Image 1 (tube, rainbow, N blue to C red):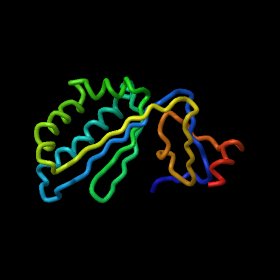
Image 2 (cartoon, rainbow, N blue to C red):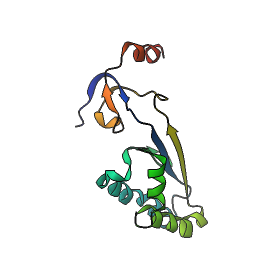
Image 3 (cartoon, one colour):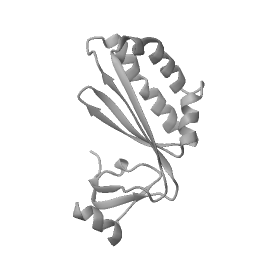
Length: 155
């Protein structure tokens, strides 16, 4: 069982970072052979990224929803994310090419992604009674200061 850290914490980092949201939506459930390869493509990418932190990937959280799956990824920089996406030796480029050649045409699956550059001090991260893995790395958990507690406590 996952160890839950009791109490309230915040995550902080001393560097800007990137939040990348990526996901897919299954449009035609019974067209399994069209959308399953797209759904399966993220596993090898994440494995590669976790094995090579020098690529700039920090961490990810996975979310399932009614018609698909989404990941919130944290990256060191936009340049690192873009380098990984465009490198033919990394698993993203072949998966993207397969999607464009096969699944995109059928409409059986849709994909989305959004990228946000988060400047130093321009974010809030509050966690309460969560496992440590809920916080992206390298931001670390700290008990919030009185200043940080006030705004979130009011909501």
